[in-house]
Length: 444
Image (cartoon, rainbow, N blue to C red; front, side):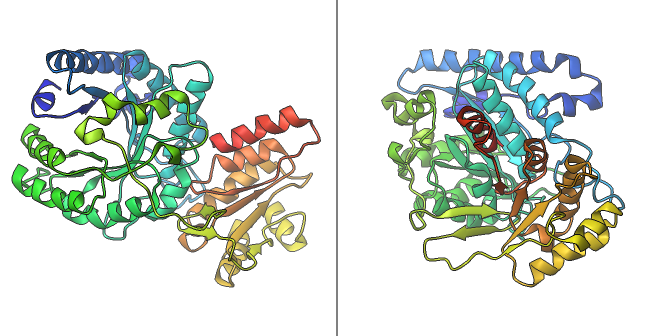
């Protein structure tokens, strides 16, 4: 940490990328996860405070690193069992909650959910962080950073940059960005798209090029900085840094650039209306705004006022000028006897064919309803959504999770990595119960 601060870094991450019970289970270290996160945060905090004391004009910050774990909630690890998952949303959320407690108790200034290859994992992390805040934990800003795996421009779980953004912007964010996997040259196109879309500060911390045959990185600090400079010339970034292969020398070169160029401009008025005061203050506080790599600003491209943003693997935007939205309703056991017969008999291959036919014939949203007295609706909803996620030609569409039962709606929300529609919650149990469910829907 001291070497990177000495190189000019304003913020360092804790050494907790794999600091969850899920990742540490590989080493039988689940029982020390809180301690690992707490001590990592404490050590980084100690060094940051030392450097701030030496130069109060450049305060130093600590971001608690929250990695993606070594499992994916959206995809099956077994090609022969597409409905299987090695980890559940609830397991991820519980692991992330414990990690969050350790990091915040240890003194981090922000939480950084990073290197996201599966947006459903990230949504579980966001859910856990919000739960921590709701339970009275110290509120800190949340940063989030996805990973584009290759030239397809998609995450490992298949989402485009825009679909990723729409899927995670439901909670207040200090910043959104991209990191890892690609070098600065390859990542630029996708950062540019994110900067066009996002109405929060944008970050990027690419690798020092692509790995060589031995897993190392050959891009020099000067070469790396020259590529990142193009980002700054375009005004794409508010937070800039380095990921794999970047040394203190790489950060020293970035510091020179950050002091030379202005940040992308964002205004506090554009913040999420429900942003906690602590997060809003972090954006407008004069001292924080003076930090070169955190000078926050930005303004993403604004679609028409009143636009509804949905997403499967790909985005779907409904504007005031949109025509009728085509919602495929054949995957509904209460509306289609044929589909209900397929589900009751366990013929999921044929049931998937019904969904696929709707996608091919112009459906823009897929309605899924499993409310039938003879079915375990929660289990069947989970299984069918898992199977849909394994079919990219279907999963590209947003999902409408359709049920009159909250438990079924919630089961569906735990399976969908995109931005879905909930159909529906009711006022029949009273306004307070309605608000409770509505808050949970947003949290998911």
